[in-house]
Length: 157
Picture 1 (spheres, one colour):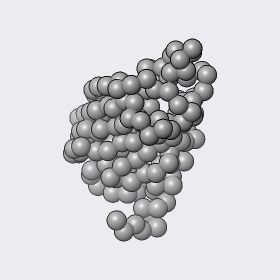
Picture 2 (picture 1 turned 90 degrees about the vertical axis):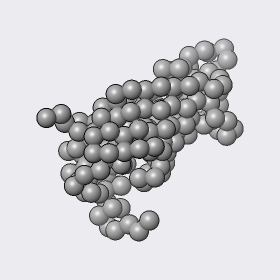
Picture 3 (picture 1 turned 30 degrees about the vertical axis):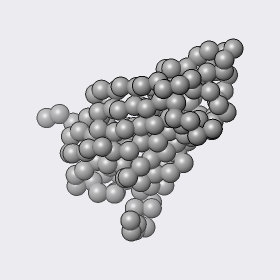
Picture 4 (picture 1 turned 45 degrees about the vertical axis):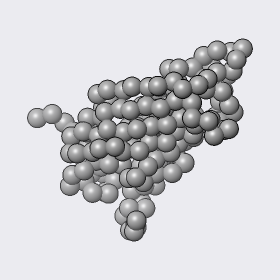
């Protein structure tokens, strides 16, 4: 994929926004690792306040669902299809209306580990809807959960 200075600036601005301007992402400790329209990935560290089962040191299921939803939303943002193009301001104006319509999470194994990566891939996008597949992988490269979500991308008229 060829990227222009505008594309690079937009990606940097979206990464900064995701990492620094969304308080919930900061609570989770979620940080963008890579970002482009084909896939996004974010990472976070295991912390005691994210545990759902303290003696087994397992990540809370709500945290799993949240990081899958947030990362899926970022993938949907990267795939907004309209006149916004790659312009940050136009994309973010459109993103003000981005919301989760449906989220399904499959918990495949206990989410244990010291760190996790969350990867989102678009399955289908249009001007109004994005369907995103997201995977949660621990630091031992085990797939611990997957999610599929549908996001609404525009203001209803």
